[in-house]
Length: 290
Image 1 (cartoon, rainbow, N blue to C red):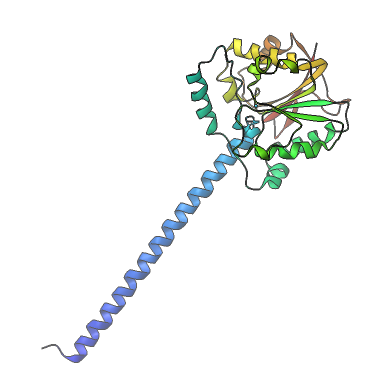
Image 2: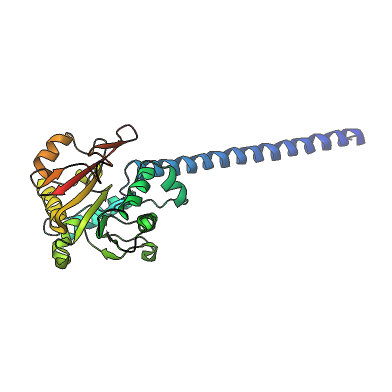
């Protein structure tokens, strides 16, 4: 027969054991939650870095990226497909590939003030309303690009965007006109836009490695020809390139761009061609139609 004292002792031991099990379970759940949270934060940081360092923001810019946007873009972002050279299956496959790069920052103001080359872009867009430009085309449009027209801040400058893959909510875009196509499709879809722009802004599309990986010489030529076709006489193509976008930048320019464009400074020497940001991670070139 078990004594009352022994029963109390056993009851106390059982109670303590139960409490220890509960505490251990709670600590395990807490550790698991912290691990999951760290993975989420790490994943979002990686996505942001990809979008900022390679804003497609054309498509994405956006046309990134995105792009990244552009973006991205998507950027983001707007690989300029050639409607004659690419099948519908190839276009859909390419679109799915690019969707992985589309990024829409949660804090747009912080994104534009702090991330990657965005502070320089803020400065650049702000100059455009004070220059001798009447009609601009921005290649690539994501939701975060709605700030661009406000930065230009001019009632006399028309701001157009090119984007084949619109953001989830197209009302997020802010422009005076939209060309819903790839660059290589523009002559076919918008024949009235010939020689219609003073300036074409190409941030995170043509100068992005992932876009160039999908291009052959014919598609490169089609893209460059389309830019030239859109520009007025002596119009300017502002091209942003990411580090490593092509194996040899000088050779690429000599072969594909300089036969049709002249490389010069921008806005009375405000920026030199090859203007470098973030230790050469991003460069900006200014090509004028011959």
